[in-house]
Length: 153
Image (cartoon, rainbow, N blue to C red):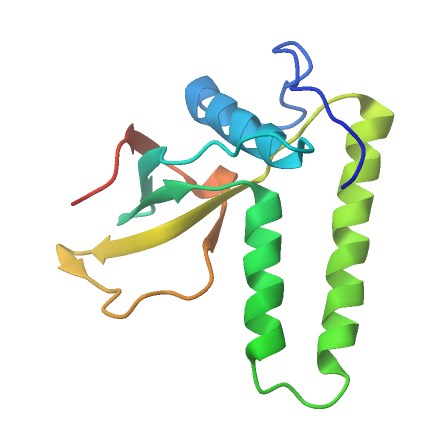
């Protein structure tokens, strides 16, 4: 995105559907907005631990733009059939453009996803991620039951 974007005012960063924790939603808004600003310093190092349907997911919040970049890099390096990456890229770009158009039209941000890097996943007291995850994790905000600021060590 090449145009300059302003950080959202609190009253513009409202929820259209459902209810979410305002602190978590505010953190996601700030991280995403900073990721969209031209020449802005990214907001990094905000660790969160999420409680999701009995699982514990811990990692660093990242902007959706950083997630998109990491996803594209991963797909480009994957052994996909000839021409598949172009189709996937076109589809993803279409989806992102529709979301940005909604934001511009309605003058509000609606976040449905949380993006994390350096992820650890625990379930039943066992770590279920034994190898580094190459692509950051994308989590549906509606699925988060609770959260703690800070990452597991």
